[in-house]
Image 1 (cartoon, rainbow, N blue to C red):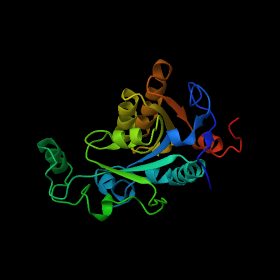
Image 2: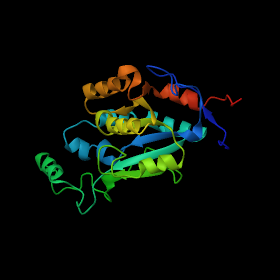
Image 3: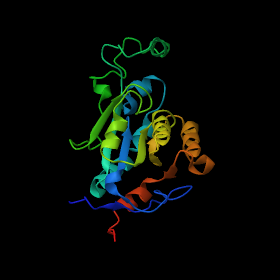
Image 4: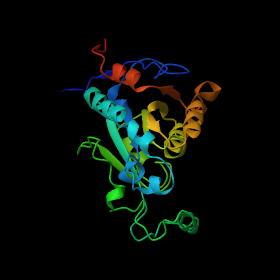
Length: 232
């Protein structure tokens, strides 16, 4: 399918539509899927071993899959992130070692690159044309080439999904906003093991008339991406 001239129609969102100034060329939009790895979603992964229930994270997978398919159909960029430390732990600070000890994870392979838990869950359709960004920090822009990748592809608008809403998703959203990317958080395509934290992160996105961006749901985004309308 030739998507070179495809456009994304305005997405119903709050506190205003996304983009705020009308439709946008799909090539300027990136769907960012944050940290949907086995370590966060599996019952024996890092997240579960920290004492959280991964079920809410797994629940969003059908929505994320729908968004990935719609983004590809529209001609948007699809970017996945994976969080994890080097296998030799050279990038793990003393504080991070301490947190692992406190959680009983010292000496385990939790969140280590090259391990099964580091990989994106097989339920998601990851293709060779997708971009994968590996990160150590919560924010996907910190110590990575994500910004360079987005600028090189002339991306100006980003749609954010993944886990967890209040940590890696919202940190990345704030980093993107500070770099003048226009952001949309897809609230039913991101999740947390803490329902209150999820709701607070979603709410914070919209304060001060969208200081960090807007909030939409999966159905609205898919509808806008799959619109049959063509640019005038």
